[in-house]
Image (cartoon, rainbow, N blue to C red; front, side):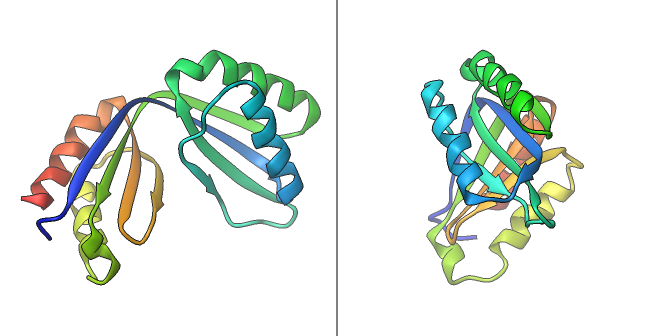
Length: 152
């Protein structure tokens, strides 16, 4: 593991998943436009691979916006036939290391450490230098400690 690894956390995160979401960019744009009208800031966005005309869309918001997002999803369900899953009181753990870009195995070390915890990982997103995990309140301390051991 490189000395440049930084682990950061954000608490009080709500995960919203729209299952059976129409796999059209226009629909995606409309959803995020409407969410912005509710004055809700989106942090992480993850879309599952398209299956026919539908996909799964997940995104995170601050727990403080929970009531507003529930108003949005309630209105959305009246327009679209989809399943809405909302999970609050989660934590985002991010592992940032510029060495990830050119060093094989860093992600493997992180995930091997997490695997030992048997944690419930709700969402994973990555970039070329960062891995972000959304974990439950119950698993937060254990997962964070496991990742910190990898850092050394």
